[in-house]
Length: 422
Image 1: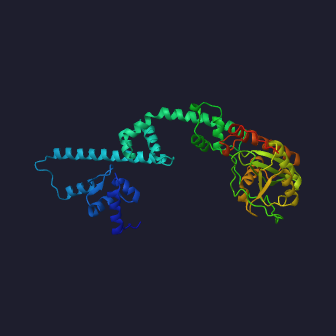
Image 2: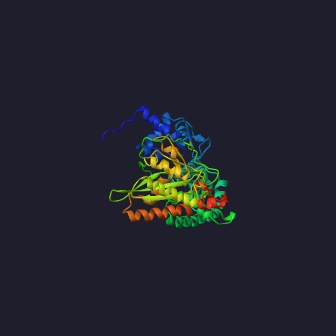
Image 3: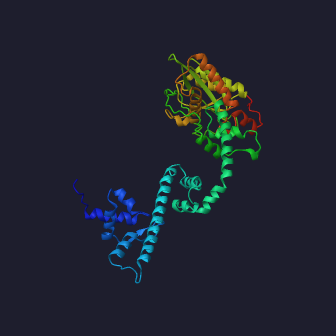
């Protein structure tokens, strides 16, 4: 086999690697480079600076260079007998063996510690490594190598019982959350928090940030699905109806401002049913609604009549809608006059002008259909629609209502009679 030759640049880089690597040994660097240990020793004597970096990061004299210098030029100490020289050399060998053993141990520790550093919190992972290996190595050395304070490690160790207690409490909270989520998988952290805190003493209430953290760790999420659907078919209006809300979907009291819309309910056979809604801006309460297999003016009329029966009268109230064909018809204008409702409409093609009603429809279909694209038949559509719309008013917590249901919100915020005299 031909003898391998190395360039001067390669030799200098090998020497630099040894001298700048903390705690490096000639054997370890030679093995890494695939060269003979004696060859590296010779390069260190020829190109080395005589200094290297120790395991603790300090600069020290290179033992290789010092031994070479002594053997080349330094005579034995004056008057040293052969027995004394032998004892001195043996002591030096023991010293080097101890250093090498120390460096080998430190390398083993760092190799084992590397497996802990990809576990999220780097500082906690280092503390955990020290705790796991404290019976094998000195805590002082472990902390030095991992660059952590021993006082911080002992403080972390002392807090272990408290961490275990918090972990057990989080596990119990996660079980309560799962029970709620099994009953309604659309619940997110805010509504879960409201459910957990309903009727409990202040000292037993749970923080919403903690609920969000536990849900995130346990991979519990409310059902979320974004799908673009067309719910309005604009038609040129026959009357000039102003926008009386200007995207202000708030009201000072019930029965003042309403929004509504018509959304289609797809069936498996390719046909559609339609849902018309009347929503109070004060409490987001669904005051009136109607469902049918057509999208004629009677659908809106049934929803408004249901709202009038619920409130006693809609006289003087504003009802805001989009520019769908039903809401721009003459029959709808006559209906508003008959019910003494003031109509209001947003701009043509602008869903944001009726965002409250659009958001209601999106929430309804997302939470009822979820991963389905349609209802299997008309009976199932009517049944599931009735169930969700009823529960929406009585049970479903709404962020606008301080995470109360719309009915509860109205009952707790006002005692006035909702009906308006005709």
